[in-house]
Image (spheres, rainbow, N blue to C red):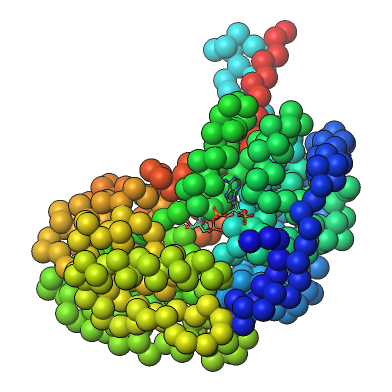
Length: 458
Ligand code: NAP
C-alpha cells in the first residue's frame, strides 16, 4: 500500500502522497541535526512554554483532528475526541514535570574523592520515531512530549495510512513555537527507514508496532550501536477469579476488548475465567458483545467502527477461521459482513487449544477468546503461555491471589480490579516479544537521555 488516506468505513481513497525523495530526506535530517545544536541548550522554561502553546492549539483544533483520525483509520469519533484529550494532558504533564524528572542526581561527593559529584540527564539528539496507525496522535505524543522536553528533536515516520495526521503533528509543534527542525514528519515508506537509521546524525530510534518491524529496526540500530525502545504487540490476559465483582469485570472486559475497534495493544484479548464463575461471566460477556452497535464511526451511537485496513480484516478473519476449523466454538460474531468498509463483528470464541493460531498470536480486532480454568495455577499458566508480555489484568479481591498475579504474571504491567490503561505517571512498556524500554513517567523521559557522570575535584 502506498502512502494514502483511505477511509476504512467506505474503502475510498481520499488522498495519496508521494514518498519523500532521497534528497528531501537528506535535507530533513540536516535540518534536524542543525536545529538540535541550538535546541539542546534551550532551557526547560522555554521548552515548556512551546509545549503548552502546542497543547492549547491542539485543544482549539480538537474537533477537526478527531474527525481526521476517524477518517484515516476508522476509530469512532467519540474515541478520537478522547484521544485528543489524552494528548493534551500528556503535553501539559511533561511541560510541567520534565525539569523535575530530569533533575541532576547528586551523590555523596566525599566517598568518591570529589567536592561535587552527580549524574546529569542530557539529550541524545535527533531521534527517529516509527509509529503505528492505531492511536495516530497518542502514540506520537507519548513519545514526542517527553523527548522534546528532554531537548531531543524528533523525526516522525508514521504509518502509511495516516499521512494527514502525521503532517498535522508537524504543523502543530511548529505553530506551538518549536524552532525549525525540532519536529519533522518524513513521509517515507518502511523500506526507506534503514538509510535514516544508519545516518550518523540520527542518535536513536523508537518503534511502536509489530514484532516484525521492531525486529528490523532493532537489528539495524544494534548494528549501528544506537539506542532503541520497542513497543510491540500484546495478547493480554484478563483473569477472572471467583471473588471478582462480575459486573465490573464484564464491563471492563467488553470495553477493553472493543476499544479502538479492537485494535489496541494493551486490550484484553484472552479471557481466562475460573470455572465457578465461567458460565455467569461468559453469558454476560457474550450478550454484551453481541449487542454492540457496529457502524459508521462518525455516528455518535456507534460503538465499534471498521478495522483500519483491509489487510487487518483479512488477518483477523483468518485467525477466527483457523480456530473454528480446528474445533473452537463461535459464541458470537465471526462472519465478515457484506457491504463496503472493513467492518468485522464483535466476536467471542471458546475452546481454544494450543494448535490453534489464536492461542499464541495476537488478535488485532474485536475478537475475544475465553478459557475455563479450575485454579489459579492453571490461570497463570495459560496467561503466560504467549510469546507476548505487554499488559495483564486480574480480577480478584483475595489478597493472596493478588500477590500471586503481581509476582507471577509475565508482563510489563499488572492491573488488578481495573482495566489496563496508560497513564502519564506510570511507566508503560512490555517484556518478552512485546518489546523493551519504557515510555511515560520518569522512566520514559530518561530513555533517550545520556546519563552523564560529573565529578568535580578541589
Ligand atoms: P506495523 O506494520 O509494524 O507498522 C508500524 C510502523 O512500522 C509503521 O510506521 C510501519 O510503516 C512501520 N514499519 C513496518 N515494517 C517496517 C520495517 N520493516 N522497517 C521499518 N518500519 C516498518 O504495525 P501496525 O500493524 O501498524 O500496528 C499494529 C501492531 O502495533 C500491533 O501488533 C500492536 O499490538 C502494536 N502496537 C503496540 C503498542 C505498544 O505500545 N506496545 C501500541 C500500539 C500498537 P508502514 O505503515 O509504512 O508499513
